[in-house]
Amino acid sequence: MAVKVKSFWVILFLLAVVVAGVFLAGKRQEIRKSAYFSGVKVTIQPEVISADMGKEVPVQLWLETDKVSGSDDFAKVSSADITMCFGSELVLDEKKLESLIELNQEAFKTLVMASLTKKGANESCLKIVALSTGMEIDKLKSGIFRVATIKFTPVREGTGKIDVPQERVFVAGYNPMPGSADSSLAVGSVMGTNYDIGGSQKTSGSCFFLWRWLGWCR
Picture 1 (cartoon, rainbow, N blue to C red):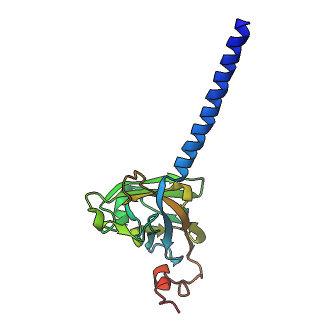
Picture 2: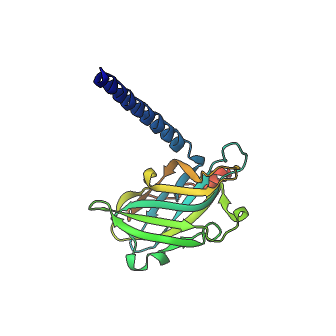
């Protein structure tokens, strides 16, 4: 009889452990889902690139922050970790990589990392990590602003895309909500750009997104 009673309490204890584990896992998932205090969109400009061989191609990386949850103010950004991938028609000289990346000094003061990796036989990826080192909170950028300009060199004719994998974008900023430790921004969308090297595609019909937003496009 004592053995049966003991087995009963052991089973009850194990069931309690399982229930508690499921409960805590759910709580962790809820916390993870709510760990963003705002959102951000990533855009590469110009929307369409048409370039000739050997001519440097400047490409701009932009961010657009959403409003802070429960506020009318747009989120202020303090750091950005963004990866851009591109085809073999474009190259970046790894030996002078940092000199090919022009940070927007009004947004970020320090280029912490700039690295190139291969993604398959005909694709490379550039990882940029930038910090607003030493900037006061009221100086941090929000809304629509440029992160950096990257200077690519076309090395062969062809078409392709400069893309930003959404899962490889990490943006953080200043959360003004009292008592909150959340600093991450949820990546709402990313928009890459198509390029045509040595082809007939023209950019005269394209419109820089900020101009369109201001109503300047025709």
